[in-house]
Amino acid sequence: MSESASKSRTSSDPGLIASEYRRFVVVISGPSGAGKSSFVKELLRRYPSDLVYSVSATTRARRPHEAEGRDYFYLSRDEFRRRIDADEFVEWAEVHGEWYGTLRSQTDRVLQSGRNVLLDIDVQGGRSVRKIYKDGVFIFVLPPSLADLEGRLRARGTDSEDRIRLRLENARREVALVREYDYAVVNDDLEAATRKVAAIIEAETCRASRRANENR
Ligand code: ADP
Ligand code: 5GP
Image (cartoon, rainbow, N blue to C red; front, side, top):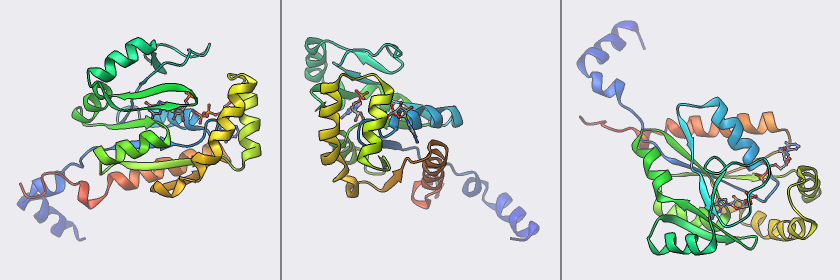
């Protein structure tokens, strides 16, 4: 576009050029050990003002390196049930024998503040969220292989042998649902895979259908 055309369009309709894009939820799912937490950490580092992590509630025990309110809100089953009854969850599900849920207070607060909200939730949660946030972006993270997945779970050293077995069994079922997602990213190299996820989010942000105030 020539400079004069650009200038005249800007002066005749500044609203069109300055129009903002509506914010959306980004759902990251994938088997335990695929690298979801690693992605989330890296994405938040890259986009500190655009992307906010939705901290879930869970009944599972806190891992040594985790912090209350940063990684999860750790609740007893009674407290979790009380919050279900009070309709505080966007969705909740039983995953690997524990309860996990997305808090309405987390997602609404972020979207209202004009930022995207990042959810690390399982495939059941992904299905529920798609019904509620229809313009969300759904990304499935795959390990290079199930053998790699097992190696990563063991190297992470946060789960007992029984829990690792359960997570591997569930992984087979979860991977079969990859086609329910918009994107599938193989986490072979963390840096390369994070770049792909970042590119997906940037491209999705520019969707014409997300432009707000187009007719003002
Ligand atoms: P999830 O959140 O999906 O359960 P994590 O992010 O905790 O997975 O990753 C599981 C383990 O694998 C961690 O110890 C992490 O450091 C490691 N990991 C993540 N991505 C890679 C990768 N591309 N190559 C090798 N190890 C990885
Ligand atoms: P972890 O115990 O390894 O942190 O998480 C186990 C699984 O629970 C992962 O697949 C993670 O995506 C999922 N999860 C974490 N928070 C939520 C949530 O709020 N809702 C649902 N449905 N799944 C969650």
